[in-house]
Length: 415
Image 1: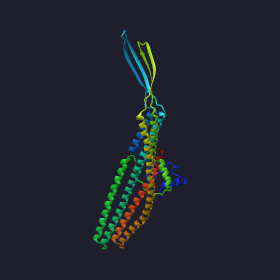
Image 2: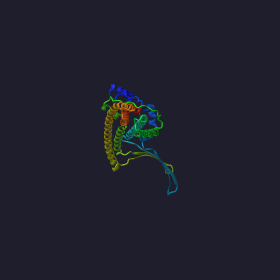
Image 3: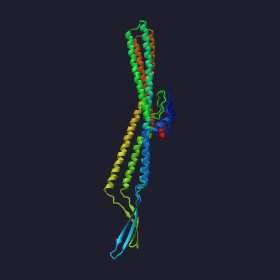
Image 4: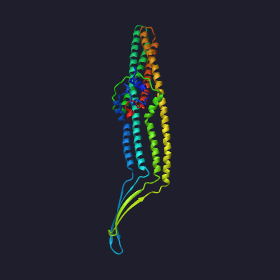
């Protein structure tokens, strides 16, 4: 069986690169639907935290755009006594405000905008990590369920073997030792089946606790599909959608804007004020205008130098994040290719192992094979089935992780 994933990717292959074509692929049938995944992902505490942080940053950006300078009102009164006699009650009032000059207002607005972009990328990264966790836990649960079914089938096989040995013992063709050996083998299978049931319960509990809104409807695991796209095309798509890279690039742009802001701040903002006063028995009316400008010194120069060094730090961080992502993409692509090949190899061997176990059981029942050969065939069949399941889950996990990293399912590209 080939999955919908295979057909979706083939459709992409017709048109060229992933980044140039689709923003979304059909969700593979063995994963939760897009609607179910969106609810679970968006309700994840890390995603809720990132969204709240985005709302807070939006207010901070509005504050930066408005500026920290505010109107300041001052008022005073005094009483003046003259030696010649008489008392003058006088008052004064003043209104002052700082003014951003040298392009600082525009720089503050742009810094606020890039803060919003960074916070939005953090939301995307939180959703991406939640999607990864959802796919991993979901596949763990399906694999645990299938592993239990596998052991239950082996349990039936072991019970049938015990019945066959007991029949041969009653016919005088098997010894009591043979019966004990088969019973011991049956007990071992029962133990493994109990462990498989426990593992399934644990996998279900982890999935239920992490994503309580997700309906746990059982799905059959698909056959892993080939990737028709080249590694370079996946590389470009994933880098285009990579939120850690967007965050690092945003922080570089913010560092550059902060450096420009620190350079502009070497010319301090002036404070202007207007005032009025009433003096000398209300016979004098005073009106005036003041401007005060701080003198730039070492503090502002050092802050500018600091911001220039921080630009280089942010630039190095972008290179580091890009390098780490490229390594991860290369490893992920190679893992998909290798795990799919291992699944094919295991799939080719499972039929022979299963047929050998069935034929050996029939041959033993007819007295044409010995007990040790039968038990060996059963264990080989179990090992082959386990290897196939592990290879299938490994291939699907790496395949779906590549889709999630490329933001091609679960509406991840639309954040």
